[in-house]
Image 1 (tube, rainbow, N blue to C red):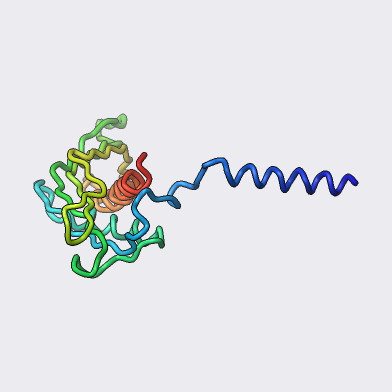
Image 2 (tube, rainbow, N blue to C red; image 1 turned 60 degrees about the vertical axis):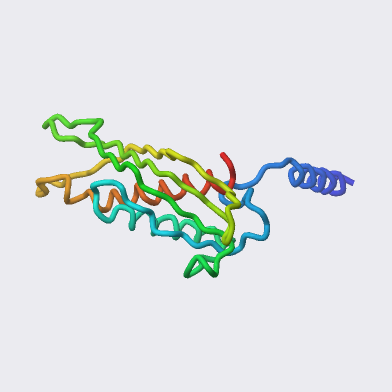
Length: 175
């Protein structure tokens, strides 16, 4: 009798949880169900930092791939929708300093204008002008290293991944 009561409670709890409306971040989407393939155009770069647009575009593509729900199309013509954007600002500024006076923590700011449109039409699925991402990151310097430049590229990779994750979550889930 006790086993039946426990089993009943477990089944009831499972049924209640399935209808609560919660979902895992990264597993839901507010996009129409007919969008299965996406083409990500290389971001247009209006900043002075060369090739940062390529790193950001690659991070966006990788983020879509990790979601496994969408196929990345090789060109716009074979896609259901196209994500395009312009990188308007890439700013790195020191926000924390060590006892030797060198910066140890930097704030990265990325500002873009983004648009996600259905292919072959003007149907805008999602768009944000002045989409801003900010994040603080440490640039750890070893004793033998003299400049921040030595560690900037790995940090840019990290910043790009976090930018892409934030962008895709905002775009797909509407947060």
